[in-house]
Amino acid sequence: TSTTTKKRPTKVRSTATLKNSPLGTASGGNRLATELELRHPLNSLYNFYTWAEQIADFTHDVIHSNHCTDGDDVTDGSNDESAATPTPKVTLVANSIGTMSSLQSILDEPNLFNGCLIINPNFRELHMAEVPLSSLTMPLVRQVQSLLRTKGHGLFASLAKPNTVKEILKEPYAVVDAVDDELVQVLLDPLLTKGADDVVFDTLSYSAGPLPEQQLSSTTYPKESCPTWVVYGEADPWTPKKRVENLRNVGRM
Image 1: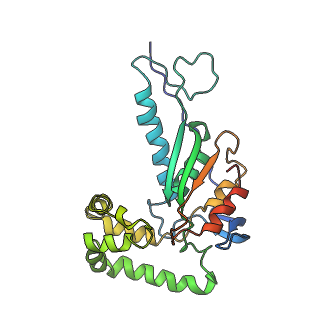
Image 2 (image 1 turned 90 degrees about the horizontal axis):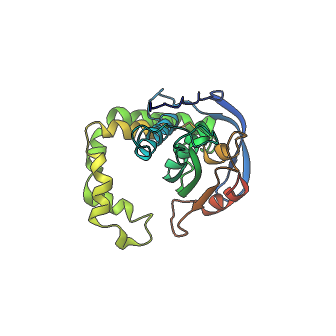
Image 3 (image 1 turned 180 degrees about the horizontal axis):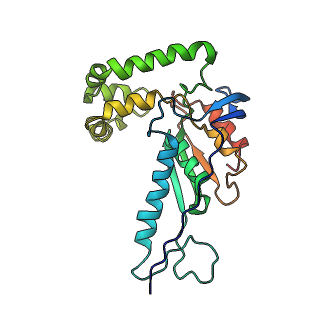
């Protein structure tokens, strides 16, 4: 039998700037962002929409490809009676800023996924919608970001050392013994690859893009077919606990 390749859905992007988007506060409250800019200020490829596409591509090209045997039809797991081998839906597990990538992938191709487990979500404190008095502080933040991109490579090299990384990790890790040499090396190896500093500074300059509450409250988020679970460390000083708890009021958590 011939192999049928399922046509990928066309992604429908929202406007570049959203108005009155629901967001949370560190104290567990709710607020509206009058403007939520989604575009990367540098038009960089390193953005949540590209990362979301990579997740969907991996699901299609690796997970589903491995599931199907030679000669099987490739389907999307729907109730099509002609489907020979329905492909399984996938549950995503996300950590930190991977939260936004995973939620965006679900928004882009909801038929691929049946749930998402989020560990210690990040709310991107340098996002222009998160910075206090954004109209006044963002020009200064952008100057610092620009300085890092042009002059920060030496600083990056001095920080990308095992002992430095280990000391940095000890701040959010309540169980200090978990910060062992293996963990440090796993995190450090990608930072030592060629061009890694450019990627890091590019990402630090990403003061825009989607945020968790905005994504989960989207009218196109599949709340019923794709429930979301959130876990976090109560002793983690980098995670705003009350804001995380308030996510239970957004979508199906």
